Image (cartoon, rainbow, N blue to C red; front, side):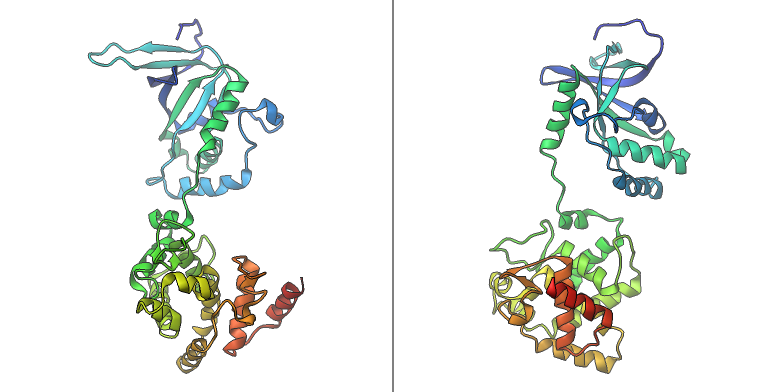
Length: 363
C-alpha cells in the first residue's frame, strides 16, 4: 500500500496476505477499542446503502452474558471489516519473514463490519459490566474496500454458505450447558437411548438404525422437569431422569422390540408416534406428573402406558400428534398429545388445560 501523511491513525501489528489477488490484513485488537473504531450507526441508513443487516438487538443480551459469565473460557471468532480509505502497511525487516508489519488506518476513515456486528455490540455491553474484558484481544481481518458495492458483495459472499450446526451437534459439543451434559449422559446410560441416539443430525434418515436425536433427548428431559432453556440440572435430577427413562422403557413394548431387533428402527419410525420427538416430549410432560405420585400410583400409571396404542393410524392421535396424516412437531401438538395420554392413563387434567385443549382442537 502507498504511504500517506496522517499523524492521527490507528496502528495494528498485522500480517499481510493475499486472497483473490487482493491484499488483506490480519490484526489483533484489544476488545476495549472495538466499540470505538466500529462506532458508527447504520440503523437509519436504507438497506441499499448499507453493507450489513440491521442489528438484531434481541441477540445481544445472550451473547453479552456469554462473555461476562465465561471470562476465562469464551471464544469469539474474528471480525471482518472493510477499510474505506487509504491505509499504510510498513513491513518489518526480519530474516525469513516477509509479510509482517504495522497496519496504519486513519482515525477518520470509515470501517464497515462485513461479518461480526453482533459480536461487536456484545463486546461493547460486556465491557460495561466487566471492564477487565477490555484487555483481551480479538482478531480482525481488514480488507481494503473498493466502495459500497464491493462491501455489500463481501457481506453476501461471507454469509452465502454459512450454515448453523444442527441442534444435536451443538448439544454434543456444548460442555458448558448442563442440559446438554445431561442429554449426553442419558444417551450413554439410559436404556431407551443407548445405541439408538443420533448425535450429529436433528432429523433421522429413513434407513438409519437410530431412533432419537440428542437434541430431542435434551428437550424431552427439560420437559420432564419443567425446565427452561437456561435452567441447569443437579446430580439428584440426573438420577431421577435416568430412573424415569429406564422405568418407562420397561413399559414401552415397541422400544423393547427395536432393542431386541424384532422390529426395525425404520419400521418403528414409520408406524409409531413414540419413535419421534413429539412422542418423547409428550411422554416427558406426562412423566413430570407421574413422578410426583406415590410409588404405588406410579406403578399403575406406567402399567397403563403399556396398554396404549401408539400407532400413527390410531384415531386418538388425529389432530394431536397427527395433522392431515402427517406427524407434527408444533408445541401445540405436543401439548394435545400429552393431554390425550393423561386421559388414557387416568391422570387428572386441569380445567385450564381442558380449556386450552378445546380451543386448539376447535381452531
